[in-house]
Amino acid sequence: MPSVLGLLEERERAARQRVEALQAELREAEAVWERFVIARETVREVLAEPRGGEDVPPVVVAGERPPQVTTALPGSVVPHWQGELAPSVLAPDYRRIMDVLADGSGTCGEAMDCRQLAAALGLEPVPAKVEGVRSKAKRLAARGWLVEERPGLFSVPVARAGGS
Image 1 (cartoon, rainbow, N blue to C red):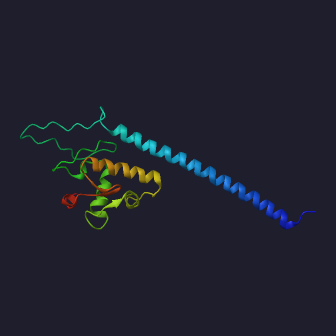
Image 2: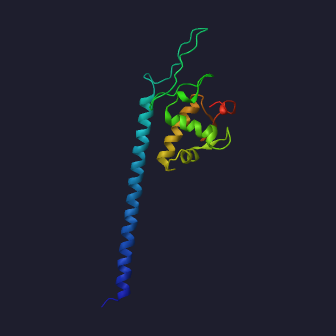
Image 3: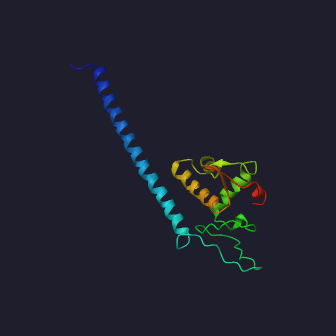
């Protein structure tokens, strides 16, 4: 006749194996989910870019001021920064990143990494959300709104920090 302790150990071992198998399955499902979230963010960004694949700056005739956009809608294109543009021309998500970097961190011009930015924006610092913030910050840096001091470390240029 088997001992009670032996039976308990056998059931405990079976339960532990099931938990480990479920944890592995959960990790795989989370990885698939994160890839879909990142893919969706990437598709949104690609669709937000102008047709033709590259940004073409507007043609400005000498002595003429370029047309000024006062507000932007979600999903609109991030314009290249020019001396007279204010962050109000940016879509809401981009404007929030600019606000956090300009004055939300406590000191103007202080650099933040994307994990800190995500947390400051009220987002959960999970890889999918951090990657979404990273892609937006990279786009702002590429268009002259932000400076990427080191890879993944963003700030508002000090000369503009007070004006945004």
